[in-house]
Image (cartoon, rainbow, N blue to C red):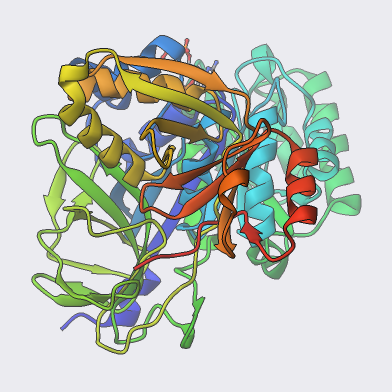
Length: 527
Ligand code: G4P
């Protein structure tokens, strides 16, 4: 029998966050290559392109140069079982991305050495910091000219408000990039012509200088020595507890495109990154090694494979062991459920899961029973991990099918896409119009595109001037206030009443006039 602790102790589950173009795809690919999960460089990109051919809606990603979906990949490296959760880089997909961050134990933040901390990184970073998720920084594209390391440390500290501590330090940059000095291992890793050309262990800084004199110019060496002294004297010392609490980020330098610095990064990261964490629940703290199986649904995605028209609910396992054919209970409904053929995701395939442990992500075939935030329990003693954060929509639009004959397909598409949670779908009380709500405008484009590509329905869309949605948690809205010039009452996809307002002033006015009505930013959970 496998020891549960041994299995949990070798799991590392993390997400990579970055601004588009910083090198997320490239770094992911190099890690997968190291783990033997793919054989040739370019596979992830090639896979992306192959997907465009089969899954048409992803064509939109290509057109826009963005990554729309988050995916999950598992691979092994040096005895570790690694789960990487990809996060879409574009700000308009923030809701899905934010939820993905709830399912990881740490985060790798990639910065482009020339650009430093960019807009999108800031937003994602904030979510990590609020949750205290440990963050590891990989500064990429050292083969190009960019900002000085100290400038980047300052930026991380000032803009993101977190201490940084360099684990390795670059020797030169751009045309003079000679490699990195690993402060932990006390060794130089040489870079030449896009490759790692060897390592050299050193005793002290004198020896470091001697070795570098053979391969680089004096100016680069002087700068490095000055910087290293400064880091040693005035820099932050590596503090595991601070890293674990998300207060300090270990920083690594490299060049993902040539794989330079990637193995070292991965090895240090795997050693330093936290194991699957404990989680709070309605029955108290749940430990990853607890016997009883549990997990929560953080993402639902329809039509992952257009050939099968399936919908997958992604479950993060928090405790216990998943075994084939096991029976579980859903917290929201109390119903008993057999997990039908859960799947795990690899770089280029998905396979049925035989067993899985805390930290793993499994994909559950979803005939429409799961909602985001559901807890799946391994016994009748049902408990709940609580709601995942919701990010209220700020853009609204009215849609209908261009061709009324397509009504059936239209309804099906809307229902399925709504359950994924990336877009909110509402209906008006009498006229049965469909109103969409989204965190970002771009989600409307994705919706239109997918309705056409996956359900064959052309849509007509009119944007509406509402900006705020509030669920009616308590109280009844009088008939005459349900549709005025400044607000409108609609129902969400499980028929919970929602009030849309044009602006904060309208919302406040309504609230003052109707003190017995309780409005909520988040939907109340339903049976
Ligand atoms: P993303 O997923 O974060 O959006 O970034 P991605 O990995 O797609 O990388 C964006 C671009 O940056 C790619 O170039 C990639 O080759 C390049 N890149 C990644 N790492 C490095 C690096 O270490 N050094 C340099 N110089 N470039 C790097 P592209 O021209 O957009 O695509 P491609 O045709 O080269 O693949």
